[in-house]
Image (tube, rainbow, N blue to C red; front, side):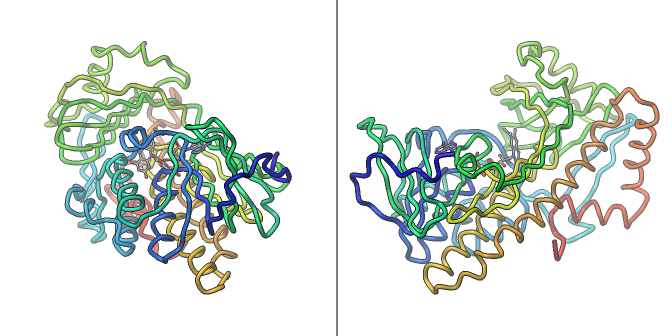
Length: 407
Ligand code: RFL
C-alpha cells in the first residue's frame, strides 16, 4: 500500500484536475464528460491505442446506457451502426421459446461491439475534445490520496523514467486487473466475492448468427449461448468446467456441442465458421465497498466484476462513469460536492441489483446441467414460468433490460 509515499521523481510539475487510470469504457466516458465541461484531465493507459481499440469483449448495451451516451454527445456512430434487439430466445426440452421483451415493455437492447465503442470514445476524447492521454504507461502508482493534493506516477514508455503528475482527484477505471484499488488499505475496503464454480468457453466465430437474436440453450450437457455481434461475427458460449483448457475444445467438438445444446424443433443449426477467439472464463463476481477512498473514486470493473452471465459489466461501467463524470464536473466547476459524496452509494445500489440478477440467471442457465434432479426440476419450473406468468415475464424483462425506475 503505497498511498502515503510520495513519488520519488516528480520532474514534470504537471497538474490536472483529474487523472483517470484506464482507457476502457468507464475511463474514456469520464474523460469525455470532463472535457465537455471544459476541464483538463489526463488518461493513463497501460496498453497501446491499437490494442484497446481491438480488444473484443462486450456487445449487449442497455437502452439506458445508450441514452446516457447520447445525452453526452457520445453515441453518434453507435446509433448509426448498432443493431437493435427486441427479443431473445430460450431453448430447453427440445423446444424454442421466444421472449419478445420489446413487445412486453417497450424497451430494447442494442448490440454494438465494445471495440467499436472504445474506438469512438478514444477518438472523441483525444481527437475531437483535445483530451490528454498517455498509452503504454507502466507501473502506475497513487500517492497522498487522503490529502488535498494527491498525485499519480507512472513509468514513461519512451524514457523509462518515473513521471509524476499532481491532481485534485483520481478516477480508478483500470478494470479487473488494474492496480488503483490496491492503493487502498485493506481495512478500509470490504471486498465481497462470489464464485459460481462454473467455466464458460467464450468463442468468437467468423460466421453469421443462426438467428436474429440472443439464444440461451439450457441443456443437461451444459449451457450454450449465441450473441450476435455483427453480420460476420458471432459470439458463442459453452459451459465447461472452470479452468478447462481451451485446446481441449477443437473445432469439431465446439460445433457439435453448440448444435446439441442449442438444438430445438424447427431451429436452424448454428452456422459454422473459423473460431477467432477461444478462451475459458471462470465465472466469478466481486464488489468493492465503498467505491470512494479520499480522493480516489473507483468505477467499472475496477470496483466490481459481474460475470458475463447477464451481459451487465459494461453497462454498469457506463452507469458509474456517467455518475462519476457528472459529479466531478459539478465539484470542479461549481464547487458542488453533493453528487460526489453520494457517488459510491448510488452506484452500489444498481451493482448489487445486477449481481443478484446474475445469480438468479445463473441457476436458470446452469441448473439443468447440475446433475441434481431436484435442481433440474426447479430450473425447468423457473424457465416455464417466464412463458406462463405475465408477472414473472415482466420482472425478468425489467432486470434483463435494466429498466427499473429506482434502484
Ligand atoms: P476495462 O474495459 O477492463 O478497461 C480498463 C482499462 O484499464 C487498463 N489498465 C491499466 N491502465 C493503466 N495502468 C494499469 N495498471 C492498468 N491496468 C489495466 C486496461 O488495459 C483497460 O484498457 O474496464 P471498464 O472500463 O470498467 O469496462 C468494463 C467492461 O470492459 C466489462 O465489464 C465488459 O467487457 C463485461 N462484458 C460485457 N458487459 C456488458 O455490459 N455486455 C456484454 O455483452 C458483455 N459481454 C463482457 C462480455 C466481458 C467478457 N469478458 C472477456 C470477461 C463478454 C466477455 C467475453
